[in-house]
Length: 285
Image 1: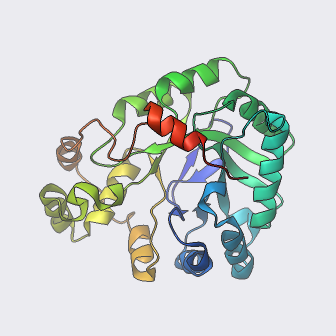
Image 2 (image 1 turned 45 degrees about the vertical axis):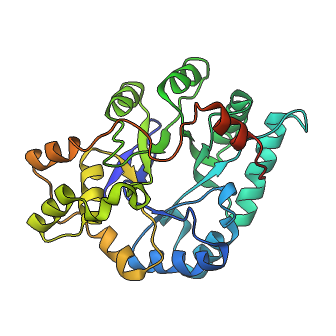
C-alpha cells in the first residue's frame, strides 16, 4: 500500500475503507471483510452511528494496532450546553471507547460549523497528549481552512472534502498543498450520480486498461495524490478497489478526465444557509 506523509511526519495509507451509510448492523461484517481483503486504513465518524461495530471488527481481526490507521470525526459541539473544549474531549473519549482503542491515528472536525476554534484547541491538546497522532478537518472551504491555519499553533494535517470526476477541487488541492494540508476525498464515485459508472469517457478509459470505471476513478485520484476511502459491502468490490496499483493512467487520459469537472457539488453546499441550519440542528456525541 502506498502512503502519503502528513505535515507532522505521520504516514497515512493513500487508499482506505469508508463506512459512511453502511447500516450499523452490517458494519462489522463489512469491515471484517475489508480487513481480510487487505485494507488497513478505516474511516468512520460519530455521526455515522457505527463506531462500535468498526471497533468490534478491529478486535475480531487480530491485526496489530500499529498496523492500522483509524480515523473518526467530531460532530458539532453545542454551546451553551457546556464548555465546547470540554465537550470536545468528552466526545473524543466516547468515540475512542466505542472503537475500543487507546488512541486514534486521525481525528477530524466533521463540519466547518459552530465554535470549531474551541474544538480545534481541544484537539491540539489531544494531539500533544499523544491520544491522536494527527488532527484535521472535513468539508472546509479554502477561506475557513486558511483562517483556521493562520490563528492556531497546529495546522490541519488533512481536509476531507467531496472530490470526484465531476467536482475535482484542483484549486482547493493546490491551496492545501501550499499550506501543507493533505486532501482526502469523500464520495469518490459521486454515489453514482451523473451516471458515473456508465459515463462514456470513463468507460472508454476503463476498457483501454481492462479495468472497471471504479478502478479508473480511484487510480485517477491516487495519481493526483488524493487520499481516497471508497465504500462497498461486497467482498469482490472491496478487492477490486484495492487492485489499482498495477496500472497507471497516461497524461492524455488524466487530461480527458479533467474535462469532466463541473466545478460544483453534486450534493450540497456548506455555505448554503438552509444547509448550515439543518446540519447545526443535528445532535451526536
